[in-house]
Every structure is written in structure tokens, then in C-alpha cells.
Image (tube, rainbow, N blue to C red; front, side):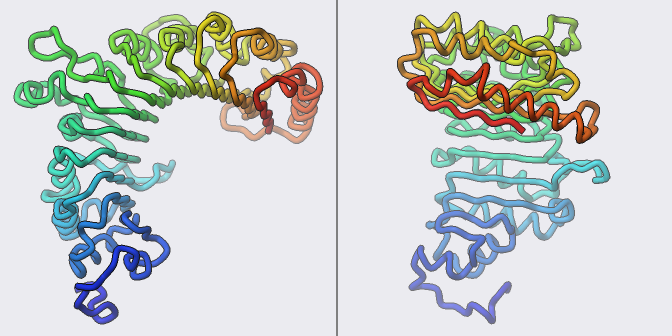
Length: 393
């Protein structure tokens, strides 16, 4: 057995706080290390720790994902965790020279996929995070009826909603308890959130309790249009935090208008509940804020906004075209209507187009322009009742 000589039994007197000492700095009390072998050590060598492990984070190499023996042991270990509440699984980071991504539906069985399908149905299981994994069937996640937090980053989803048995089980109940939803580079359209049951009357997903929505929209799809449709179909009466990263000035492949204009339709229906807005925009062309200012003008009369963070990624060739285009942000925040606003952050990042680094001369010119804005266009915001922070780089 692993580490048997170094850590002989018995462990009958092992205390929860002893877990960290045994496992080393990578393991925190109640939380599994990202190293799968440390999780296996505790489950296999000192099962007395099992009730104390609530949160597990696993980061595996491509080889480990397809290791039949390791996958079988991980399946046994994860299903043995009677009090598991949170699970994070991360694959190898995608690079230009990397092999094809890890294919979730091709993993050995029994393995992580088998374990996930057993764990997610438990009433105590509340949080799931998947990163850098491809071909994840929605059925593997949709069965998590008690899930409160879901984070999918660089994950490719597979539509398996043709399974009538699955639909009849989850329809109207899926995500009913979900409070936080993060989509980042999911490589799939968002239309699955609009799917209905076999009667074509009821939505499969229930997002009524969603409080946090964090989504990074793909620049090569119609996700902006689809997000508009999703937010129209799901009222989200309790939404408090909206974080959106999008690229404007680009037409959707469906031929609809450039991105940026949907901001009003995303924000205004929730102005009575949104306390935090985080917006990141790129390729803004004529309007550095991508229609955010006009949206804020419409919500001045009724809002509970406390925190506002705006990130603007500017191509070096277009930054000089904005001129006084930065000032409307100051104007709208200088008007009445922001009684609850506590913090405003504006982060301006200059990026090189087409993957090139800015030359030194151009960089110095842009840096000078951005520095001057602190003492000119944006200066009034530093004297407002809220805290204002300006970053430029």
C-alpha cells in the first residue's frame, strides 16, 4: 500500500487537524489535494479521515485520465466519501502543441465519470467544477438536482437530451437549487438552457434561484444572441451578480447586429436585484464601454448597484480614436441615482492585434494617453462618494 512504511497504522486516534500535517502543505483540512494520489492515500490507508473530507480538487495529466487502474481507484475513493460536498476536476491545459483534449466520454470505466454520476445525485453534493475537458454529456451534470454551484471552464459539452428516460427524470427539477453558474469557453451554444421536456411546455432547467451568473462569450458563435434568449426565458428573480466577458464589433455568425447592444437587455430586467456588475469588453471600436453607459443611464432611476467593475481591452491601433469617448462614464456616474454604489473599478488594458506585442514607441504613446486621463477625463470620479480605482496597462 502507498506510504505504508512511512505512515503505519493504526490511525484510530487521527484528528481532523492532523490531516494537513500528514499530507503536507498541498492538503488543507477538509479539502482534497489536487494530487490524486494524496486522495487515494487518505481513503485507502487511513479511512478514519473519510468523514472529514468535504471538498476534493483533482488535477490530472492526460496519461492519468486514461490510466485504467488509477481511474478505478479514484472511482472507489470518490464514491467512498460519504460527506463530499464539492468536486473540482481539471485536465491538462490546452496549448498549441498539445495533444487532443481529454475526452470525458472515452474515460475508462469505472473511473472519474462513473464516480461523478454517483456523487452528483447525493443531496449533500453542492458544487462542481470542470476545467479543460472535452465531450462531457449534459446528462452527467443534469442529474445533480441539488447542485448550488457549477463552473465549466474550457469544457466542451455534448447534447444527450434525446434520452427520454433522462428527460423524464430531470425535467423541471434540474438546477432548481443552483445559485452560481459559470461558463467560460464551453465551446457550445447556450441553447441547451432553452430545452423543453417531451411535452414542449416546460423548461428542463430551472434557474429561479440563480444569484450569480458569470459567462465568457465565445467570439466565434451566436452566444450573445443566445444569452439574450436565455435571460428572456429565465426571469432570474434573485440575480445579484452578473459578470460578462464579450467581444464587440463582431457580427454573430447568424448575421445579427454587432455585440454590445444586448447589454441593456441583460442588465435592465434585473436592475432591482443586481448589486454587482462586472463587464469585460474587447474590440470596442467607437464606444470603449460597449453600450454600458447608455444602459446605466436607463437604470439610474431604480437600482441597488453596489459594485461596478469594467475591464476594457483595447487594440493598440484603436485606442487613440476614443478621445473624449471615455468621458460619458464620468458623466453618468456624476448624476443622481447611485445612492448604494460603494466601489467602481475601471481597468484599461492595451492588447496587440493579431497576437503581436505592441512596439515600444506605440506602447509609450498609449501609456502617456492613459496616464493623462487620470488627471483629465476621469479625474472627477476620484471625488465621488464611492471608491474609484483606475488601472491602465
